[in-house]
Length: 234
View (cartoon, rainbow, N blue to C red):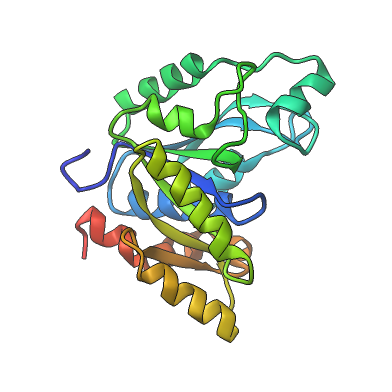
């Protein structure tokens, strides 16, 4: 935990794929960066990219100006273990990712780690997951990125249960894509999330990645008021 009330390592997971983990990683990074924190982002396993093609960490850098690093890059747009198997590639072990994150933490106030898919997607040859990575990094905490619509409550509660069973700290929930005109279902889902112990850190508006980087960085704090509160900058 830093003196500013946030853990040094913040792990971003989703309740599913394509819920907005990258844009939330960027928004968290932007808030910390604009607050004067030395921050970097790390993605243990990036899938679905060609050699030389920009991935999620390049997008975080584009939107925030902060540095980002990929651990391993794989071509197939699927979970890391089957993607590596298709390519005949060998995934780094959990210890390698822990070592990289700890090294990054030595020169930064915060390392924002973006997972692949959900919390229990396997990242290593041994079948270790993002949950195992969080457990191997005492003092870290998880931000859960969720959908706003129908079905999100079950996915969210399953992920919360998995975190609780492993005694992994949940920093809070972020809705990955919030529309200007939310439905009744979306509004009631958000209210439900607000009533949970960890609460809602905020919601990133739909289409945020299309904003100019300066606008994205400037507005991120308004999207994540719960994060700003924990940072102690309000």
